[in-house]
Figure (cartoon, helix red, strand yellow):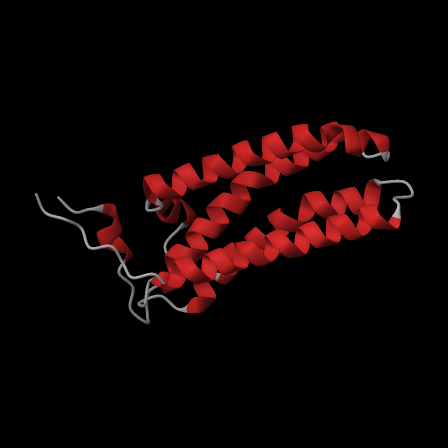
Length: 156
């Protein structure tokens, strides 16, 4: 019996595997990471709800956008790392996943900045600082994961 990941060995002439084949190879850790990102986004939306309402941002739309983009963020990050760690795959195959991470990360914050009425400058700078800090942490985490040594399976 062949394992699904066995069919993902690529040489220079092979095409990128299909989306469903990629997602199936993500594994339990990648799936749990994605679920954790969704839960974190829902919790964050609840915490910032009063502030959003105070400055004229529809908290329901923020919740929908934040939680709605969370799976794309989690899957994109996990798939980007997975592809970048695979020495047999060209870096260009990870670019769509990384672009998806960037869009999913920025969308809720850009919505806040765009839809709010007249935000005080400290709130705007706070949102920009938050985006910068957590964007940097996310990029650092992805880079760290790519450079990690592969875990050898144990027999037994």
